[in-house]
Length: 273
Image (cartoon, rainbow, N blue to C red; front, side):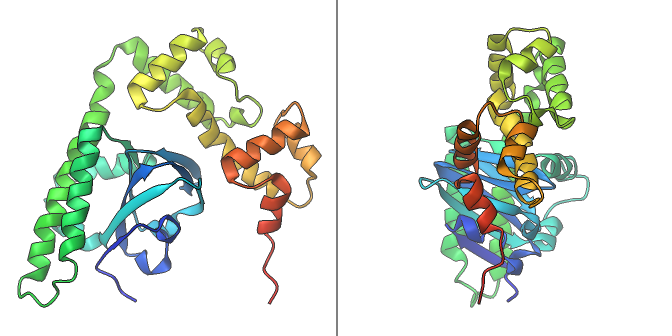
């Protein structure tokens, strides 16, 4: 089924194959969830906006029981044609491909939600002579609201050189895969020669997310890869990832995957007919 415009509240449906030609705009209304995009795991909470072209590339959707989302998807080429090629959308889309999550203020989240609802309420008006032009104007409003929020998030680069250095160095450390064995803020603070309190407050102020959330975003894909390797026992995985006990390992899995290690491994098995 070829879908030009679609609105939904189904988190698990955001990466449906029928949406492969669209750009997904998802707003977290409440609760927590996670997904993998470009081989990286992202965690979302209330007022986080996710913008992903061709959302079928999203994998490993996981939702806490309290997660509530609303999303709007539109044909990707249709949206691209609405904007001039020299628009902020070029740099913005590159940045969003690296990190598709934008942390919104309450005010900006309200604007985006209102945009979603205006689009939702007009999707059914296909009988109108200027339907695509109408939807285009509403999509354009939504996109400029998103650009405004994204530009403000990127503009937090007005902080000091020291702050920018700390953020950059933390991200470079995490990119090495060190979170496989090191998941304590104190470790990263020590590597960066700052106090855990300073590191935590700096990362939170600049990015809107905690140091722990970034550590987990990098550690969870590693954990999933290990659980998918049947050659490794759960004890071996716990040791490889430097968990102090199997019970702690199990609690970590349950918190971040929604299943115990054995249950998650079982979920990977093909379903019998």
